Image 1: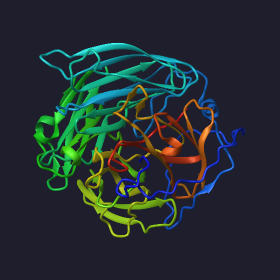
Image 2: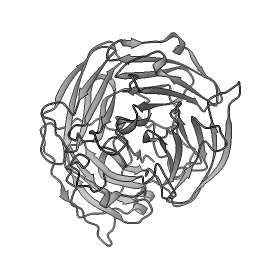
Image 3: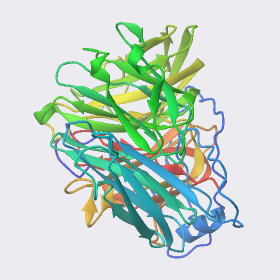
Image 4: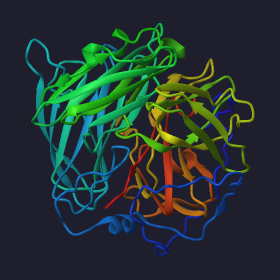
Length: 512
């Protein structure tokens, strides 16, 4: 958040001490990004300290460079990754089905390599009158830079989906949607998948939920869509079984047509044939209490989920959605990592084919106005999401939601919410970067502005701990790189917003 004297809008975080030496050799190499099963150490305190090491961006980029090779099949469990620098080609897929909200989308392409990368784009809108609005364009992303792309250029106003094919690796795509009711950020997918899951969403009065299914392939996809609600259990509309998504097309569905007046919804997309990219767009209320949210789904269920920073301000509403699509109960443990101190883990039982809302802002004993990381472990595969309703009277947008993540990595690329010439919304900027360490030993971390050649902060994150950098270190509209001595999880918050978590997004793990 930006500096403010208003206690309702400024979390009581403790920024880590950090050092930025004028010149120092990289004391460690960025390790290959990977997902590891990490069991949280319960009851361990997290104490921040200074680090006597640094890592420059050039060292990070060099560490991920490799011999040119055909691009491998993406393996990122969250559906996002940075393709290897030496790849002959790479792809990204952005779907922004915004329904009738009036929101518009901007895609940001960030090049983490030391050479320019070119690409071609294909954007489509929903079919109208038997035809599919389509636009093609060329794009060039300079080295260590970000460019903004208007995916609707040449298309009618409304929803869009875009495929990007790049002439090399090291480029990622993210997007921002902005409209009368607020703004939101989300990563674009680096893969298609046969399933996508979403935890959280509402169709109560004043709220609309739009599901987007984008098929960038040359063959049709056939999907089944079902829902789990907190009141009615499983809902399987016949119209959503065997739903055909033609090649190169975007299909939008208004969830409220079949799941009405539900305050908590999980959406499950399973492809019978082919694969798709799926996002959900939530429009929440309107006016000073409203907001919008664009989320990329999760391409796999998991028994471990993470949120790098959650902060419950006074009078805010922070909810965690725990969804169990299986046929047996799931016992879920929620472990917190703080900048200092410890909190007793909480346990929740989620019934079969069930959804449980865990009220993080209303549970006694959980921190208030202090950031903490969440690690959610389960005895069965589940999907996890979070929503944040800002306190009354705060600056809009007042609502946002995000998907939890499964990936931890030793290197991260974190795009900014826009560029100086094309911000995601007027006055957009990074307000904080959280780095959580779910491991059992301290992590040495360096954070740099992409292309700057030197870090803005170097620090240690304790075992099962958390560090949060504020706008003095990471503010503005520069992409960030994170290099750690061991796998960590990251989350970026953006402003303007009414509270931490309203406009937030994860980064892209560096996995050569």
